[in-house]
Image (cartoon, rainbow, N blue to C red; front, top):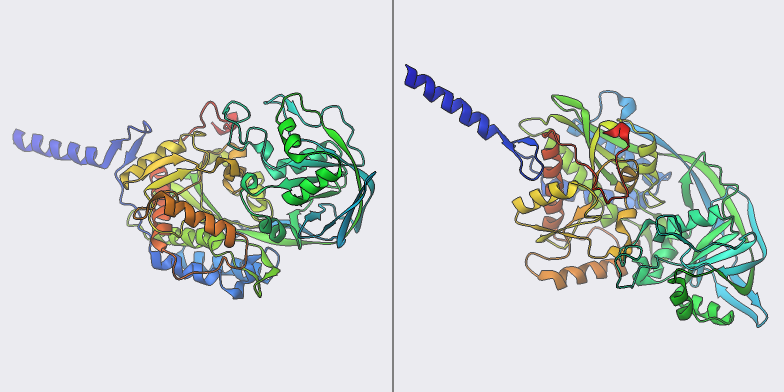
Amino acid sequence: MQSFKISCLFVILFALFSFFSCDPSTGNTEKELSYPQLLQSNAAKHLEILSADKFEGRMPCTKGDTLTTTYLLQELGRIGVLPEDQNKATQDVELVSIESEMEDEFVFKSGKGELTLAKGNDIVIHSERSQDEIRLEDAELVFCGYGIRSTAENWDDYEGIDMKNKIAVVLVNDPGFGSDDSTFFQGNTMTIGGRWTRKYDVADEVGAAGVLIIHETTSAGYPWFVVQSSWTGAQQGLAGIDRSDDCPIKGWIHLQKAQELFSFAGMELKTAIQDARKRDFKAKPMGVTLSTTLKNTYSSCTSRNIIGLLPGTTRADEYIIYTTHWDHLGIGREVDGDVIYNGALDNASGTSSLLAMAEAMKNAPVQQERSVIFLFVTAEEQGLLGSEYYAENPIYPLEKTVANINLDGLNPAGKMKDLTIVGMGYSEMDVWAKKYAEKNGRYVMPGQEPEKGFFFRSDQFNFAKNGVPVLYAEGGYDHAEKGKEYAMEFKKTYTSKRYHAPSDEFDETWNFAGMMQDAQLMSDIGWGLANSDAWPQWSEKSEFQRPETLD
């Protein structure tokens, strides 16, 4: 009888040991789990539907918006992951839409005469002011380096100059790009100051009459065509923000035309760039003026974030939040007879994968302990607006949000050996990514194109700014069969020919196994966190930290 009791005790202890394990990478107890398995057919079906011409490029506040959000609600309802409180299934995001009509030509004047640039091909400008007409008269151009003000770097490109009725001409990226010094800014890794959104904000702060960013493909991370497609037509922003004191005009100038403009001003752009990288740089008036008029039409509209919820079983008030943006650019500039910017990869791929993920998790044989949120945000292409609004007005409290995992532009080239983490080193989410990547025979590495500032260009950034640790990662640089060179060439071809272009359409030749490989990995990471007591933290060197109220 005693032997029988000992045997029973051994069986019980063995069962308990098998059910719980101490994860050496996180130091937290995690259950041995059966992970939800995604169906590739589900994701491919959604992707083909959402990127069809019928959806008109999924621009917020258009017919494509209504079709897309209706579809998402229908699918989340079919899957069974809509919140019981229907008011939490959607979040209205009030937007203001402004379309600026540029003059056909921009005439710059100096003592040498006149230099004329054409709208669209040479220069693109718009305004964020809800104002019928924006008029500049003889506004002087000033070369303001990289247009950066940074206390951390002890750097101010606007120091000592009054920018009233002056247009700042600034370089894209930041001074560290192209240097061999990783301690100067962050070397080739773009800092937030190098992001165009921050350059716009700084121009607002200093009271400039305008800001023109010199576009250069390598530093920007995309070709001039993307500027043309993204910055012509209606531009959207969050409503309810007083922009009457903002910089009246904002825009971009083509590199070749910038070289002509500097020559017209008696300057050499190459020398100006070298000077702008020096700590003693001072803004330099160019002796050139511009008079121009913008005529604006503007209106307000309402778009929606769509939210699914899979409640946790024992800790339902703690959340893992997945994000993906459902929007794209809508109908725009004609290219090869096509005007619909379908956004198949960007980002019907992420949207469809998150729907497939929600269905797999809902149908898992055992449900997770923490709640999982499936957040489909609007207006990412307009400046991360939907995620910004959610992060500032969360449906589920951020202090109870364990982590954010973002899906944006999943890999269509086939299975990869790598998992490349954008923003690697920021938080303990790297540990979770590494653990699950290695389980699947993959290795992790940091972002391979740090100069492009990808961390600031997708929705996880708004959660990071508000203290929630994030993961934004993908395979895409080391193809499982064809190697690194093939993978990089695939990326370059997509960026140069299909990114933010009508040609980003559903492609039956895409290898959907690559998308599913990444989606499954992101699903596994979230599922593991949802069944763990871990609260990933930011690294000490990170500029992001959980506020004390989030600890």
